[in-house]
Amino acid sequence: MAELPPQAEAFNKPKVELHVHLDGAIRVQTILDVAKRRGIHLPATTVEEMKQKIILHEPGTLTSFLEKFEEYMHVIAGDREAIKRIAYEFVEDKAKEGVIYVEVRYSPHLLANTKVDPVPWNQKEGDVSPDEVVRLVNEGLSEGGRAFKIKARSILCCMRHMPNWSMEVLELCKKYRHDGVVAIDLAGDESLNCKAYPNHRMAYEEAVRCGIHRTVHAGEVGPATVVREAVEVLKAERVGHGYSTLEDHALYKQLLDQNMHFEMCPVSSKYTGACNSDFSKHPIIRFRQDKANYSLNTDDPLIFNSTLQLDYSTAHKYMGFTEEEFKRLNIKSAESSFLPEEEKAELLDRLHEAYELIQSTAF
Ligand SMILES: [Zn+2]
Image 1 (tube, rainbow, N blue to C red):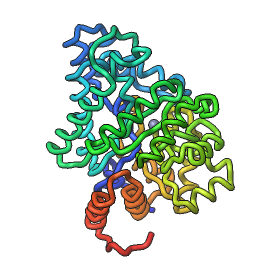
Image 2: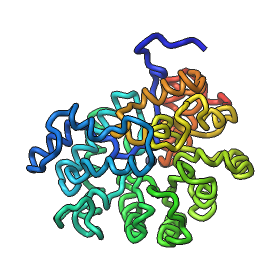
Image 3: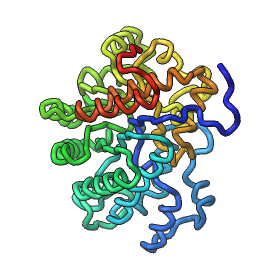
Image 4: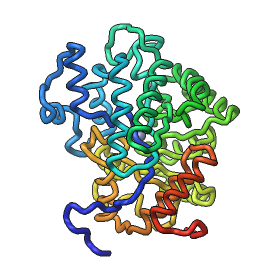
């Protein structure tokens, strides 16, 4: 494989991103601006200083990663202008990375300050409910989509440690299913399984019944049993990360046969400690060799100080990914997106054209 010239993009073509958290993809400058406007004191006053607080510099644990959100979520949550702004700017940033379709996820509850129990981030009770958060994010995404000519849809997250929120998340997915929300997700500590927390299962059962699409964070740091639960109990149509699926050979084979989509995040998996930090030993290599159905994603670019380009160049440089594989995985990502069939077909047409592939190309 030819080495890339320095600074060259590993894959300078239209891309699809399916796994990125809105609250993990905020501009640092925006956090500073909003804090100033709201009179919230931060321990830093410049972008560089604030970055030092937020960015994970070394591979850590999932806990050290989650603590990073404490640094800034109280600034954005509960503020209408800020919530809409981060959604709009997110679309601009994705357009700059060459993304033409993105599914961005977030917990509406974690950005709210009323009708949420408990009110998160030590905020005072206010008047921004989870429902209003979804409306504001939708506005930001659709205005951004029009301004930057890409398509952005959202996925609403249930949190594993907050089972009481899950049915409300499902209700919001139903309410906004024709207004930008395409699916439900379950995020957080994978050790909290669904036997102990039946509300998640109930929400997902209702999602199946209503035809709401489903993805689940599973097998990121948790074992393969979490992946099995995601697909068998929660009826996930996609798996967020799923690296540990490889530990259960029968399950891995079954999911390959079912064309299950895995949302993989190489740079993220290093910094959260989910995978070996030696990229040449990364589970994604096995998925690639087996021609699995997966996407490449940033997850939380703010926390990892990363871009989608970094994930692609990492895959190219350390994992032997070729241009052909990048094309294949983006086609697979589009096929596995939660867009309605007609819009999915349009997206696939655009990719085929950009990649100079004929529609019948069998990957
Ligand atoms: Zn994630």
